Amino acid sequence: MESFARRAGRFAADEAVHTIYKWLAYFTTPDYILGKASRTWATFYDRGNMNVERLSEKSARVTISDFPAFPAVCARVTGWMEELGGMTKVPNLRIVHDRCHAKGAPACAWSVSWD
Image (tube, rainbow, N blue to C red):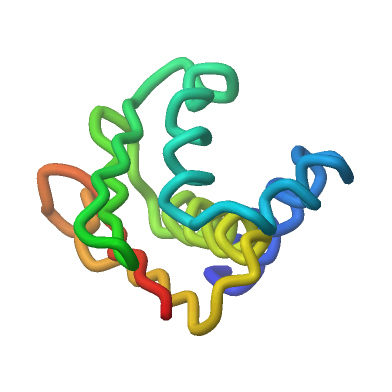
């Protein structure tokens, strides 16, 4: 189920971003793209908050709080971030879901880094 949900997230992100924006994404960084996405979270969901914190020039932390977490939902969000971050064409993009509300953490969180 997790691999399907991840593919569904990648597909949803690809469908949501139109051609000109995909081209413009090439000139940005994953934390910039995810930061823009966090501001549009409420457009897609009526619950939860997404926060993107820039940790360094090549890393960020994405946290989603006040949102019901299930393994399939977390996998879909992971795939969504992989696709959006991948649009920037940065080398070695890594997205790790290292805190999960479904497993007892106060919120879901992902570490995002690239070279």
